Length: 106
Image (cartoon, rainbow, N blue to C red; front, side, top):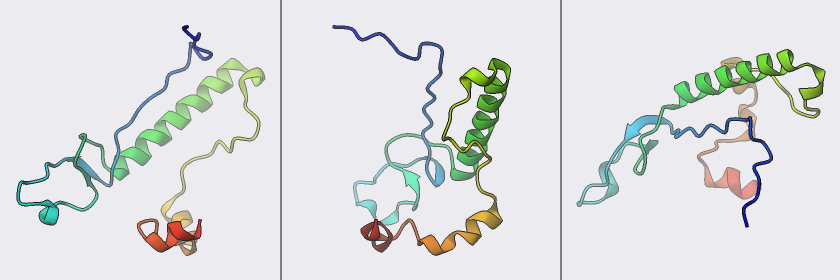
C-alpha cells in the first residue's frame, strides 16, 4: 500500500557532512594513517561549509515563512542563526563531543 506524502511541497535536503571535506579510502595496510574527521564512505563537505549551508537554508526557510504569513509559523521552534564562535566558546562546559565520557553522561 502506498502512503501519500504528507508534505508534498517541502524539500528534504540531504547533506553529506564531516569535519574534513572529501573522502578517503582505507588502505590495505589498515586505517593507521587515515585523516581524522574525513569520511571513508561518501565524499562530504567540511564543517565550516556545513554551518554556512545550514544557515543559508535557515534564512531561506524564514523568508518563505514570512511570505506565507502567520499560518505557516511553527510554534516551539527557535528560529535563529547558528551559534557564533563566542557562543560556542561560552557553551564549552558541555564537554568534548568527541569524548566517550561526554556521551556516557547523556
